[in-house]
Image 1 (tube, helix red, strand yellow):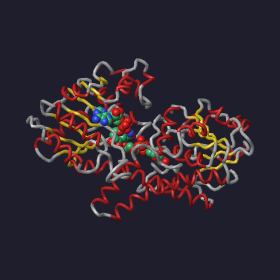
Image 2 (cartoon, helix red, strand yellow):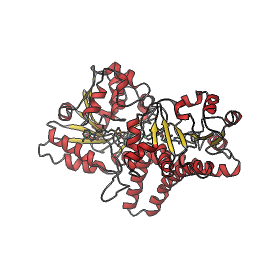
Image 3 (cartoon, rainbow, N blue to C red):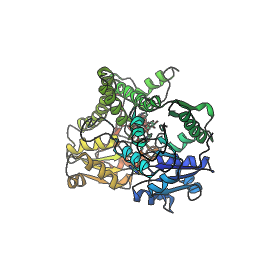
Image 4 (tube, rainbow, N blue to C red):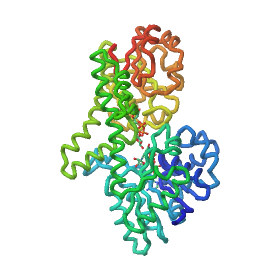
Length: 466
Ligand code: NAD
Ligand code: UDX
């Protein structure tokens, strides 16, 4: 079996960076080079100051400190990286299309195609190309068609190896993956390529957790896994609305059903709505694929997961407005958290963005505090929506670096991310500096009703009647 000695990964993002760092850590005999067109990002990965890495993930900087410059390298010389490697991972972003056919649903495969053409142009020797990005089923076919037409007689094996890490726990997920999925052709060369990649992972993942399938099953499984996970969140969020009307408590319902081993207890936390770069994008992609095969009922079924998520975000914003006596115009509303979940600085599709947008429409004065998200990112997120001018966004929304400053003289606090530090705040002090009545809307269910009410707050928690 071929033992890989040189790996290149195209795309130094939330997946490429942590995944390659862990491969470098666990496979010291393999040289791993992560390349990206974005020179600023590469410079951040190479920064002496490990607190300046472009992404924040617990445990990541320690691994980079151990491996960088030894067998882990970050470079913007994409061609050199491709040329030298025997195995090339493609880990570029595949966002939802914002133009043309499939706009708003299909995956935009522009970056993937650019990578394929780059590999085809540069490669002089046979290579294994690994789809690490999440891709629509049958993308490998398109990749193959580009790569097989280089006219240079170079042979490529294409594998699908989707990534299942979740942000905030990426390192833990990579070190102790539930499974690694490797899809490839069912030919002798395809099998050899699958075995070569399995060997890399088997440096630290038990053999029985490295699953091999055909390439189409692997591509589709990634979309399906995310759809199932998101579906659980939407299911419990739909029940949270019912709980608020019936005096049932959504945490008690989650616990009660989660004890059933057939249901299981994970991913049943009711929230202000799921965010992140993956769930919505991948479900929309699944919906698009189902529609393109004429499977309308299948498409409608999965689209409902997104519809329910949008409803949950809207419901949370509407509740703030109606509770604050039907107007938030000119009222200061503090946001605790902007990231789409705790322990990440990623804000893509974060519920906070949409809730802020709804409240700004009502002319609220929103003041945001997030321990890891930069001011620039918050404004970019809002500007991207295009609801109002950048000047107007900056006039209505402020970003502060002190949670107390956010709370000072505010009418309400909305908790949008479940950062642990929010639980440890001196809530009595916060109550003192807020306007009265002091409202708290807990969209993450991290604070206790009894304690908050005792301190004098008007406390609203998602999934519980007030
Ligand atoms: P990202 O935006 O953080 O990183 C992608 C990087 O690819 C960027 O730095 C970009 O500059 C670079 N890039 C784009 N086109 C390029 C090209 N032609 N040549 C060189 N570099 C190029 O994206 P991400 O979050 O790492 O996601 C990557 C893929 O992994 C997506 O398909 C995503 O769906 C999937 N995925 C993401 C997660 C997650 O938690 N973020 C988890 C599992 C799977
Ligand atoms: C997800 C998948 O979990 C991961 O396997 C895949 O590789 C990428 O997409 P990620 O989006 O990083 O990972 O985080 P995840 O933990 O799945 O959370 C997604 C969103 O759902 C977050 O906004 C989170 O707050 C929300 N969520 C999750 C809930 O609201 N309730 C839950 O019970 C779980």
